[in-house]
Image 1: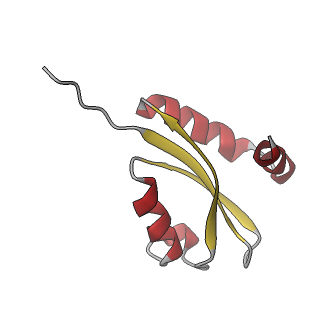
Image 2 (image 1 turned 90 degrees about the vertical axis):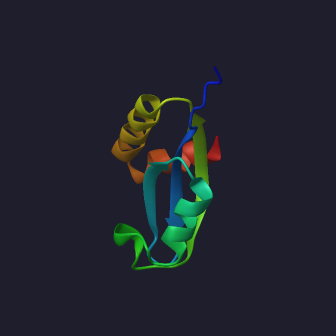
Length: 85
């Protein structure tokens, strides 16, 4: 029996217009970025210049959610440091 599994991506996008970082997770990063840049996502619809600045993949949803939670706790300086590494 073949095992099928999703890869979960945790990501950070940045809007220069709003000067804001947004963190999230998804199983389809390209589709999710498109939703952000076309105003289809409620929380990011105020801008359309969202740029992917960070992403990491996980095999399980649990791991991805833990990483997303960790990222959401980071302050701006910590995010910038993470992006420089």
